[in-house]
Image (cartoon, rainbow over all chains, first blue to last red; front, top):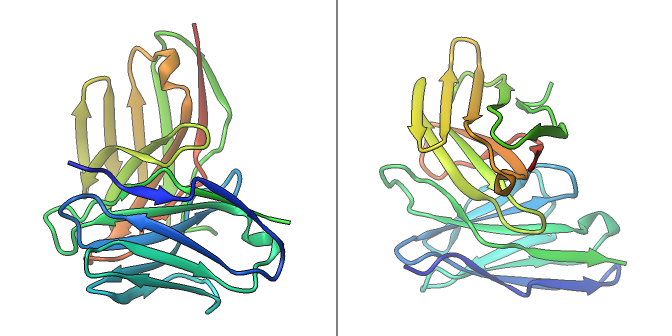
Length: 114
Length: 112
């Protein structure tokens, strides 16, 4: 069974730029959720994708957007980067409506905005 | 008041100690309760998963949920230096596909 993978591991951008982060779901999972974890904080929910559509969104502005592909992999796009976007971005996969609907996390992408 | 409160610590204990980690919450609709372990600069790893109230044991780990008090706990017996990490509590309502709500995490250090 393949776990959740994310790429890149880390990257550095400057304010105003755009970034795309990628996630591959764990085998057998059909749902992807994205979280932002600032230093010293717990993860904060950004949004979730199921059947290639957004299935819920946290308190994040529209410049945070995403995609889910037919193979259940996913992208997180952030436009007009701000300094406060510096964080660990986590992807979690799960099975929508499954017996536990438990979310399993990838290793994260550490984004630094200068 | 935040939905989930967790003392960030840090908590330092000697090897072999019993560790108690706790979270309180305000949303009575939470039904699923989880504990994740996160090593430095890594993603959270699921440790324990509990539905509604009660206890669940897995090896050295025991999770307790008291819904009447809106209080959950994780106990670690015979703590090891490899247990040194940040422990995050997380919970969600009884609706498929909803977000996990996390505490800030408690940093634990176990010294040999």
